[in-house]
Every structure is written in structure tokens, then in C-alpha cells.
Length: 372
Image 1 (tube, rainbow, N blue to C red):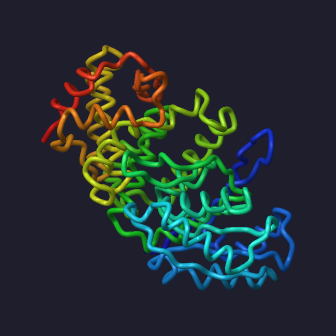
Image 2: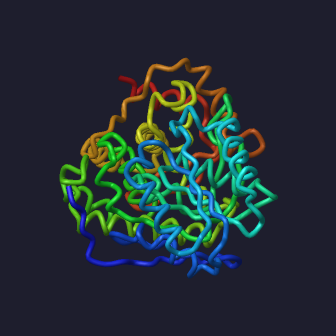
């Protein structure tokens, strides 16, 4: 289907050092080169465009043409980009290409793809020559509303998701919603999990609009107007939180709603079994169940969350996992402080709090109640 957005919107990520814009608009992929020049890069700058085979087939040539038309010295690297490929070995391929192309400290890596490409290309940029610039051009809904914004980069370790990484903010995030026209339905639904997350953690109005839309499992159900709204509101919400807490010292942890137990699902089921957003949906359901048991929010709000997850075509049942393995995996989470797992738990639609007093038995009891 054709996606037409009525406006091009720029949202600033107002960091104290090195702020950057998030540009959202139909057709802005064709402006990639000139938008990079507008960020202070000069013609002749060496650019490594990193993408995956599917995205390259649809958009690689257009992105490369835009870079070259702006006078940038661009070349392309195509990598496999499933979650199971998100490893140091794949990042090494990007480093090898950077070496082969003689990327310098003034050079640039452009990530064209979903969250996996963005994470790996961003991490490669953070670590090449102790840090060169990166531009994020997300082509999946999940990356547009979440992964491409905020500077988190990294790869997985067998013991847990994203345990190897760095904070490395992009110079520009360029979101062209027309690229969603070729996004597989499963990937679109996975991205909706992150949109629902923004509704729960701080945007009750967005949550209500998603509820009112009815079926939001595909772009036909969402429609152009709501698509623009969710892209803008999600990007603005993340930009606000990141600007207030760039390196997750406090407030930014609320963006991990659903991720703590979602990462457990991804890790124990094997990377690639569940898409990231699918696992986050399960994690949100489990976090909501814990919150009900602790008296933090109502069973009615939990049911609203479960109903919206279902409306997005996502599952929320907890998979059958060894309980001891669940607790062990939680201890490897990045958010553990002094041996205590910190959970983001909802208190109402649009409000959450961070708790460090959730017991292992409370976690397991919630998972049992949600088990299929």
C-alpha cells in the first residue's frame, strides 16, 4: 500500500552536548545525502552504508544514489541481520569494511535497516578509531519508534541480550515511513509492541487512540493519520527521556518496560525464535501481572493492556521455560544493581515506577499465571 504523510516533522533530541534531529517524513530517504551535509559534513567525506539483503534490495540503491549525489564518497556493505547475527563477529565484518575503505575520524557510518543493523552499525561506529559518526536510517516500525533514537548500540552475548555495547548518539535520525510499505506483517506487529509501551509508560492519550483504532495489527488498520501520530509521539517521548537521562542513570530506565522479562524470553528461547517486539509484548504482560499482584495497578488496566496487545496481533502468554533458568537469566540483566533486579512496573495507563523489591517468587508466580 502507498503511505502518504501530510507533513515532514523534525523532533530535536536536546542533549547538552551534540544534540541531533529526528526527521520524519514521506520521501526523506531521497534527501539522505543533503541532510547529512546539513549536519556539517563536507562533500568528499567517506561514508560506509551498512544494510541487510532485504532492505538493500528495496532501498539500498536509492540511499547510495542520494549519498553520491551529495558528493559523499560512499560505499555499501550488506550484512545478515537476524537477531542471531547480532554478534561481535558481525561487527568485525563492519570493522573490516571500515579498514578496507580507509574510514577516518571524520568519516561516517550510515545504518539503513532495522534495530539489529542499527545496533551493530552504531557499535561499530562507536569503536572504530575510538568513535566516528553514525547516522540512523530505520526501516522497521520498531527501529523508527525506539531503537534508532537514543544512542544505545551493542550486540548480544550468549548469556544475555545487548550485554556488549556502548552509548553512541547518532548525528541524525532519518525516518521515511514509506519504507514500511515493504515491511513484513510480523515485523510491523513487533514494532507495535514498542508503541504500546510508550502508551503505558507515559502517554495515556496515545494508548486510548490505539484502543479506539480497533485492529492495529497492520498498516491498513492503523492508517496514515494514526501512523504519523504514533511515529511523532513515540519519537518525541523517547527524545524527551533521553535528553533528561542520556546514559540511563535514572529516568531512562522506564523505557525498559517489558524488556527485563522480554530479554529472558529472547535469551532462553534462543535468539531469533521471538522477534524483539514479540518478546517485549510478553514481558509487558508479565510486568503488568506482577504489578497487579503487588497492588500497584488494577486488574482492569492489566486487561486493557492484554486486549491492546491482542489487537496488535501479538501474543502475551508466557512460554514454558525452566524456572531456575528464568531467575538465573534475570541476574544477568544489565539493570541489576547490587544483585537486585530492577523492574519497571505500571501504576496506571500512562504511568510507571521502578521497583527493586520484586522477589523471584513473585516473578515466577506471575509467569505461571500467564503460561499458555
